[in-house]
Image (cartoon, rainbow, N blue to C red; front, side, top):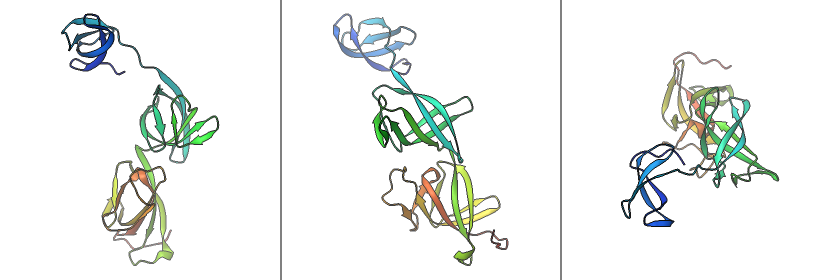
Length: 217
């Protein structure tokens, strides 16, 4: 349970009108013992709130081709699933991580309860490196250039739109989405106005729009 603030409503037994069953209480003031008012009988009393039980789980996070191991506290009773995201607080940074697999005794699965999970596998999606395949303006596909573009995970690419990143300017022609991305009905998109955020994109296909002469790398 997160620390309550004045005005929050929580369920607690009321010593005046309902000592055996919970009623709705309004938080009047926070503290180690919160002051609450029963909304049924207006009785005001202090109450120590129970702490939520958590499970500490190992998490392996991939980021830009590297990986590191950390620990994360997961609320007891929580169900975890591939594709979900959570905040991971490490000594180096606070980052957003997307679950790519859950490891149990019997192997990796897509969904499981926190109690059963031994290791959470994920990738950092706050900032991501998108694989880009770019062909020249004249359409010759035998002289394509491949590179990685680092952008915020929520940066949106749209088919038909032109993006400018310093010395690189290109028009998006299509993209493949990752298999851990949610909300897509197919893997490949190439129709006008199809869009996806960078953290969901496996590969981006673009046409070079820079004014400098093309040279194959």
